[in-house]
Amino acid sequence: MKLSVVTVTYNSGEKLKKTIDSIISQSFTDFEIIVKDGLSTDGSLKLISNDSRLHVYSCRDTGIYDAMNQAVEHVSGEYVLFLNCGDVLHDIYVLEKVNAFITSDSPQKELYYGDVFVSTRNGVIPAADQLDDYTLITRTICHQCLFFSKSIFTKRKYDYHRFGLAADMGLYVACLKADGMKAAHMPFIVSNYEGGGVSETAETKRQNIKAKQKIMKAFYTKKECQKVVVKKIIHLRYLKEWLSCSEVFLGMYEWVAGVFDRKMTIGYQQR
Image (cartoon, rainbow, N blue to C red; front, side):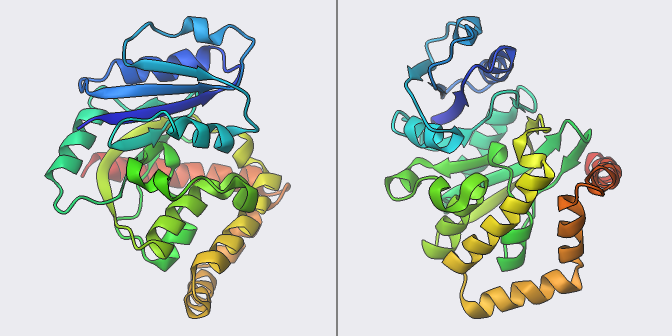
């Protein structure tokens, strides 16, 4: 089975090389790398390895999700992973494990997702095993750990006009809720997420909460929305959201979350 890994870049410097090197070093070899470049001027494209599986496409785009939508047009693999510049595959066996998991799964699903190691927190965040309406909207699946069937993109794209920086969530929720597709959790770490990006500022977190509300209204029934709201109240989710979006408490929230993630990592490693 052929896998495709898409990386979008614009003046990413050494981060691009770091990401590409982690893909090329994989033990599994039946893959392609699609680099969608937004007309970089920093010479970063000259830093990456010359490999026959690497294909670079350069043209103007309006941002990360527009670039990802453009990149899909060049994909030939059966499943697609979007790996951002600066993020890397967790070890050299990731694609081998992904291939083994998907090919042995029957019937095969349209989406497969794994766990993520967050570098800024030095800890693993395991994804939910089951994606019910609550976990689907409250426990974000890191898109650097999510493999989409290529067939999805004949119908769906990243709808960044509606959902902004939460367009990744908008896509997989649309697939699972509106299109009735299936997903499966791969119980291993797929990628090391660099962290510290624009999506982790207090203002962006506020924007993402509003975007998630739009996603729920777009793909959930009124009754499903009400059930999610009740669960969020019971699990103090609204308090957590408020703390994570507060300019005053954001640092403390991230510190506490980091401590929790590191404890989770110890348990993860002892499984």
